[in-house]
Every structure is written in C-alpha cells, then in structure tokens.
Image 1: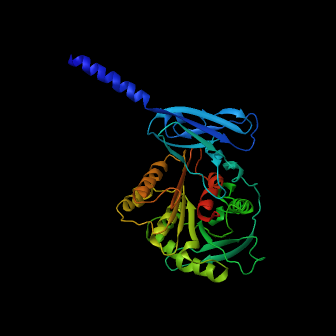
Image 2: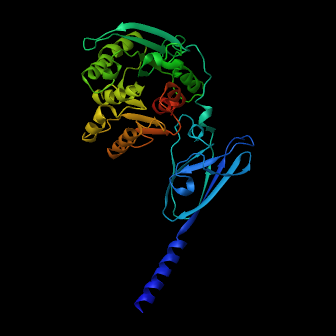
Image 3: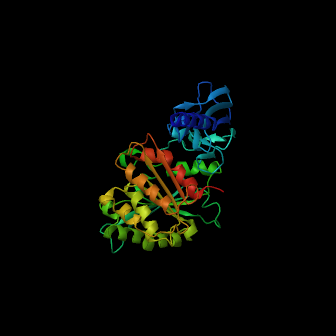
Length: 378
C-alpha cells in the first residue's frame, strides 16, 4: 500500500511539473536583410544556445521579420541577445547605448517583440585610413622625477575644436599612445583607429566629441603599467604633469565627471589601478584585455579584500575569447565587482569577444563599446 501511494504521488508530481511550463515567442522586426542573412538568438539556457551566437537561428518570415518559439519551465530566468551570427553583429535597439541582455522571468506564455534599429557591425567599422583625422598636437619628452624615461604625448583634438572657440571637451587619457592613431608608428603596423571610430560615432550622433591624450610607452612599460613603485610614479606623472599641461593648454572640461582613462593589456591594468588610486580625478576607466594575471594576480588578491564603494565610478572591462591567459582574471574581476555592488549597464560594462585575439586590430573592432559607455549621448 505504501509503495502504491508513493508511486501515485510521483506520477502526480511528475504531471504537475510537466504542466508548469510556458511558451516563449520572440518576434524580431528590423530593416530588410539580404535573403542569405540569418538571425540568431543566444542566451543562458540550452534552448537559447548557451551563449553561442550562431547556434540557434530564428525562422525567417520575410525580409524584415523573424520568429522563434520555445517552451521553458515556469519562473525560468532567461537572458538573451539577438545577433546575425556573431558578437560583432548583435542587435542594437537604442542610439548611443551598448546593447544589454534582454531579461525575462517567465510567469506565463509570453510573446516579445524586438525592433533593432541597427546591428553592431554598422557602427564600429569605419573605413581604414593611413592618416590621422582631427587636429594633432605633440608634446615631446615630458618627464617626472619618479620616472627613468621621458614620454612623448600625442593629443587628438576634435575637428570642431578651431571652429567653436568657446566649446570645451571631455578628455580621455590613453596609454601606448603610439598605437592609437597611426599605423606607421603602431606595433605590428595596425593602430586602434581611435580617430576614425570617434569620427564615425560622432557623425552618427551616437557620442559627444572628446579630446584624446595618448601617452607613448617607454622601455619601462611593464613596471610603469603595474602596481609597483614605477607604476605609482607613472600614474602620478599623468595626474601631476600630463593632466595639468592638457587642462592649461586646451579647452578641456577638467572636472572628474569628464575625465576618463583607458588602455589595453598592461595598459588596461594601470587604467584600472589609476582609477582606484585617484578616484577624485577619474570617473571612468576602461580596461581592455586587462592583465589581471600579472604578479601572481596581485590586483585581484588585493581588490578582493578592499571595502570598496563604487565612488560614482564607471568601469568597462572586456576580453577576447582566445586570450586564454587573461580570461580567468577577467571573469574573476567581473564577479568581484558585481559582488561589491557594481551593476552592469549602469556603473559597469563588460564584454567577451569570443573570437578575438590579443592585438590592436581586435581592440579597434570593439573600442566603440567603452566610447559609447563613457561618452554616448543620452
């Protein structure tokens, strides 16, 4: 008798669970796409492809409409994005905004209508040029008592700088300055295309105009870009020598809210550190492919124990999927930041570029993301 009751209970429970599901429909409307183009959904469960951007395709209805349908347990927490087959082609829904995950708690049968206004590859691929756009100024061989080498500085002013003499601009300080604008001076012959990317976004009215200050690296690049005595001296050099020169020479908006710092690799690490060391001067810090692995993950270990407030600081972090040495530290830092109260889409933005490697070309393809996060038009 007991066995029969148990068996009946299990059957009843199983039927109840099976009944507690809901249908989720996704309908995407966009500008017409070529006949051979596909649209995909990618998200946090198996039915959504487990974040593979080219695994689960939507059914094409016509040149502007695609549909997708699945069944999931009630109260499922879904997060997903729409792409055309890669992270470089994800859907964008609002001008000047990095696309966030679409989040849905499934409480009943649900239909979601999505209307992308463009795709990511339409805003981040300006024409490659072998010349620097904008107004370029140089300040040669700036030095500081704490550094062993002097640094050249390249300043890129917006095209409107001379046209509107009353206008002032936010400032972005960047490391490895020789790699930013000119392929002739850049490592491996390919630059970040910061000038072209900014011009493209400004022309599209996606971001405001800014001044970019590129600080050339030195033979002490590794220690200067790390948490070391020379790293502290280099950050102090930016704060006490470079920034006062820039603010006194050009029409900047010198306030903290208009001052950002950004770099890649070790330059990403020192950007992250400088924002912690000088929170009164930097309100935004971008760390692309940051080397959090350096010095036995010293930055992660020390950051883990900090009682940190976000201090109205905006942080952008990203990494390439093929940067195997960097991925663990990148993911660990994202986890730590979220545990300390940073929220994605507000004061924190991060992105994993699945097929990207560790070079200037990869960074040039996604630098539009931090630019929009920091300086996008609201």
